[in-house]
Image 1 (tube, helix red, strand yellow):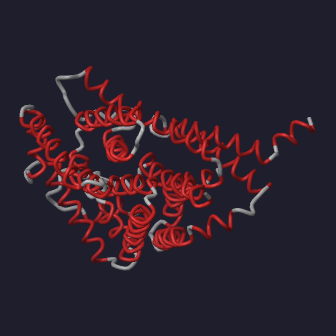
Image 2 (spheres, one colour; image 1 turned 135 degrees about the horizontal axis):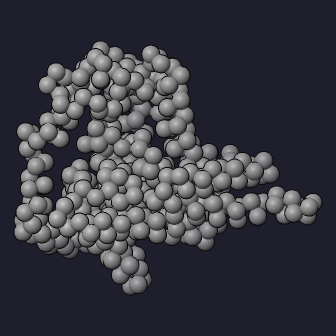
Image 3 (tube, rainbow, N blue to C red; image 1 turned 30 degrees about the vertical axis):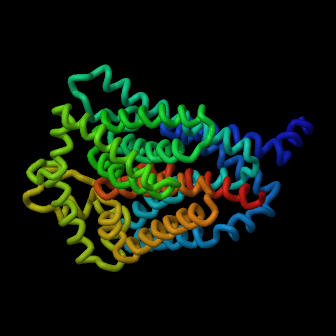
Amino acid sequence: MMKFFKNFSEIQNIEKRTCYYLCGFSFFLPLSKALGNIFLTLSLLAMVHRLFRKNDDVRLIFGEYKKIFATIAFLLAAVFISALTSADIFYGVKKFLEKYILHMSAMLPILLICDREKIFKIVKCLFAGVFISNSIVIVQALQNLDKFWRFGGLLGGMPQGSLIAASLPICIVSIINVKPVRWKIFFIISAVTFFWAMIFNGARGVWLAMLILIPAVVLICAKHKLKALGGLILIFMAVAGIFINTPNLSARFSSITDMQMQSNSERLLMWKSALNMFEDNPIFGVGYGQYKFAYQQEYIMPEAKERHQEHAHNNIIQMLAECGIVGAAAFIFWWGYLTYFSLRLWFKYKNFEWLLYFCVLWAIMLHGLTEFNFETSVTSKVLWYSLGLCMAYNRLNSKN
């Protein structure tokens, strides 16, 4: 028994178990919230055990990324203060612990992994889970071809849309940057799969996000800009041809600018209501966790038809309404600094992992201009977990 506990507590074995748990978390994160949370909990417990046995590298980790952690601390402080100023402090703090502390904890265990092969295993498990999750959308569509869109896989429409938005640009930049032919073929197959998943998911906000982000990241990472631009034009023409020759798709795309469509008109009314909340409570907002109560009981527009909405369908406007100028400023500052940090490391050192994180960050944030996805369980964990993966891998590159 003593030998078992001795082996169980050896640093090497703790880190090995942590890797296995993170592989499980990575695989199930895009597939099952329950199973993902089980493996995340195991990873966090292993992390605590590891810190109890060895913690001399924690200061180095926080020191290397102190500015990133400072922006996160600023964001946490702003939201927490808003929760303390809300009409229901207990509910606000409870929601803060769930939506911020729990979701952000996904990035922590991976920071203690200091082995390149283990990180590659974890990334492969994550991509496998994403590939299966996005493929399920296509399977659902093939079983219901008369419906043609609005398929949400195992996650639901908008969370699945955010996942597709985060994964498709990664495939595109990987096709451009990876050298082995077998990997190029793999990412081409993945990109085609994720493209059709995006089509069948039908989230128009994702379509718009990809229309902006994919050309941007291609031009950022391509060595030959003119060739890249020519390729983008050909791809755009091919995709446009698919939309034009498919009545359901062309009608769906045309509806983006149709302000008489209820989905569009209701968003405008919700944004107006949220901005009214901000005007009345400019510093800390109506209080974190209080948007749905304030909206439904006081700020809902008389002409609104969807009278039980719980969020503003926009990350920034949601922040302004719930957490005021302080919360919105912290959110934008965090977003802006991570954008600057990612692009700086790509342009200066060609750190590919940070270009991939830029894709994840901006895909989710662009989709978040038409949907409040920042606190959605899977989307939020993907955002924070990807950050942890990049930081862990970048530390290994720095050492080398």
